[in-house]
Image 1: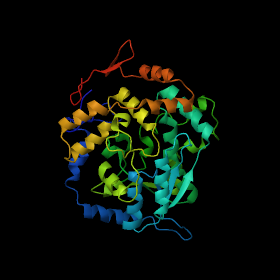
Image 2: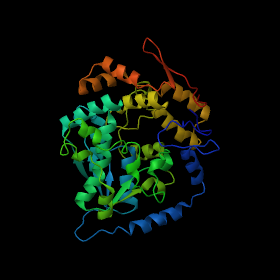
Image 3: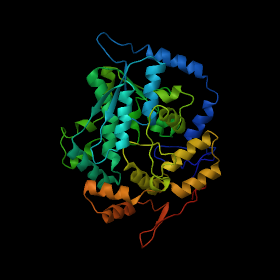
Image 4: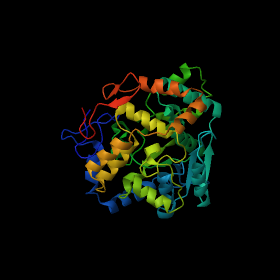
Length: 376
């Protein structure tokens, strides 16, 4: 395990590859941004949008996937108020046991701001059973739900015959998931290769006895379907010089976004602005930490370090203190939902701990072997 020499990105992030000078892809991308002509990029965006004119009888110009959170609100308001487009917003709804009141309020806020929102709700019992299967098989309950989340937007684009899909950040450039890189910095049609979507498709679900009709909401459209319909995903973040986690949150909070009010010791959410529509993401971030040696706090501080608002030393302190945090109450509610005991949960998590990065003691305590900011 090695760390980026500039931020606290470890080389254990899936699909990443550091440069020979020890700099991670995200830091390299950020350094290149300092020389970008943002006026020129806006002109590129305007030229690009002209390739997707609204057709006769078509009410919407584009589709944006939303959760009601900071990024989707920033995108929606930029597209409507700055670009003058009429977007159709698509929200994949969680079942009542999972969705938070703040998540419902934030979607309602988008509607009150004048946006048209289509809400999709996959069959709740199938959703629950797939979540249990995902946890049992991958120790990642979100493996199935993220398939539905990412698939819902292009599926609806096909059904509404809308060719332009606007997305937020480019995970290849801004996070380092290099398999998602397309022909240009704004080209998102290789999003299908991101770690979330490229893990075997639907085969593992079919092998468990689910039918093709059960899994319709979880099927990401094929390349041929994209090409036949002329679908194009465009990363808006590539065109916005001030696109960042904190900046998007500040912009959205000024327009009615409701933040998370729990303590960072319970959530690992330094600023309370990430994944606001549900809380079980907290335990998945904790599990990610035990698998790969980094969690949500690492992603927060990396961006702050790159922006010069936090020192690497301060980032190391925060990562060491909070990257593994998850309140027992979140784990308990999740276990009730998928019908397992808390002991079963922890036995499964401990069996998935990366033994190269952590020591697992006889009493169940998981101890970090690596030094934050240095590695092994």
